[in-house]
Length: 170
Image 1: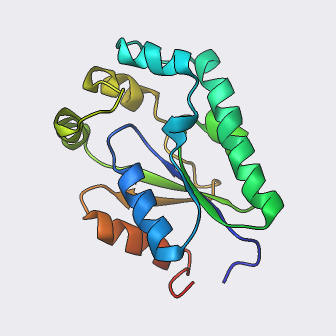
Image 2 (image 1 turned 90 degrees about the horizontal axis):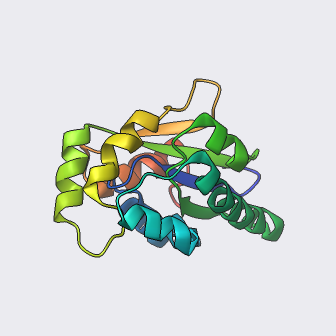
C-alpha cells in the first residue's frame, strides 16, 4: 500500500474513455473524482466547440486549475482521480507531484474517432482528434505512468489500474 494517498491523472486524447474509467475507479475505490473538462475556462470550451485546437497558451490556465485540484487533495491527505488530456510532457510537468500517477490511455485513433462520432453532448468535435494525436507525447520511462489499452473493456481497465497500483481492497 502506498504511504501517501495517490492522485491519479487519467490522460490521453479525447474519447479514449478517461471519464468512464475515472467514474468506475471512483466508485470502486471510494475516491473523489473530478472531470477535468469541467475546469476548462469558457473561452477554451467555445474555441474547441468551434473546431479550433487549443494552444499551449490556452491550456496553461486550465492545467493550473487541474494542478490546484491535485494540491487540494494532497493538502487534505486524500487520494483522488482527475481526467486531463496531459498530452505533452511539459503539461504533465505542471501536474507532476510525488504522489501523482499518470494513467495513459493508449490505442488506435480510428477506434477513438468511432467513439467520438457516437457520443452525445460533448464540446470536443471529432475533427480535433488528429491534432490531439499529433500533440501527444507518451510518458517517458522516467515518468510515473501506467499504460492502459483502450481495446480492453472499461471494467478491465479499472481493474488493471487498481491492480497495478496495489489498490485492490482499498
